[in-house]
Length: 504
Image (cartoon, rainbow, N blue to C red; front, side, top):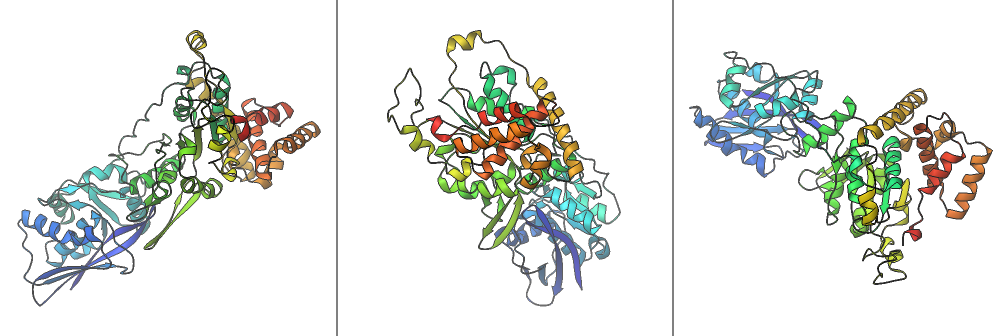
């Protein structure tokens, strides 16, 4: 007799159904796991044997074979412990085989039979709902899995509790979604004294979802400004929150019940590798650009990042997805993020400073910012200088608007965009509008077309650059409550299109 149950293997943020089969056969006693298991799955034999022994369940003196089907799909992770244990218990008659066959499970076993949380409970719950089976998981993963409305979830703290549930002796209580994680505060915009132009750029970026590059000397407040951007963004929709949480679940970054409407804010160090940025490693886990999906990716000291790491960003910025290709895996992750970057004007940071002398003048700035490729620079909608604020001005500068006030204007602008693009069936924010739809949403008059033509010639704007200026102008018009884009809106958008040479 062969007993069966189900679990999942992860390919990116997608959970693929895996059938777990267990057979007992005559011969020398042994315990084999087949079906392309990794080291962690092979070690499940010892954890399952010890956990069952702690419950007083002895393994039969027969050959035990566990098959994970499909056999050509790599099986990675300790979450296979629980389905292997349940399938084995059904094979030896401790649990009803038909009951075990009607569930999907995942969880790691400790040697004394306790269940430990594992990554991926949320996408597993999506797979269980699609297969119309009950999901069995550890208690600490239950609140996360219960966020999927159509899923039936049972969560227990020990293997003994799950045995009692599946045998009908003591059903587990219904699991409710965990509390939404409180967003981490990045500070209030009113903490930033001066820098009115930079704060205006931050508001425009938040309102339209635009990519942003700040160039300025050390201590000018670039990082401080970037940290306050999430506080201006609208709360993520239910669909966006689920998408983001599934990626974080696969990466093992969700806490108990860790669904949140707050948008992620990722800030990798400039020593990050290509794999850390794009994804990879064991099981092709998501990288920073996927962990920032529906949120903000902040790259401080942008020119210090290796060229190969920066070039990884180009395709996701256009397509919203990244494909991680490795020898044993080929997976795609959603990567629709808002890129915010900061850079010093030169290596020493003093280029253009009247009070200090740059160590490599006059071409230090051009060489330093030249590390950023032109195609990547072209993808920043807003590029502007963040000048230093003298201490006297800093001490006397009045507190500006708080984040809540600016966020209210951003929310109103986003509402206008949502209404517009719902009718057009294109994009969600101005930064995402395809070029083909720009004529409909911008509709420049003769004065605006003339201004754009002169600016494109003088600034050397590419076709992509012109489109990005138009998208930014559309956002400025939305913030002003204007139904159409006019020359003043376009002029302000062009003022934030800093040529790289001007930064040095």
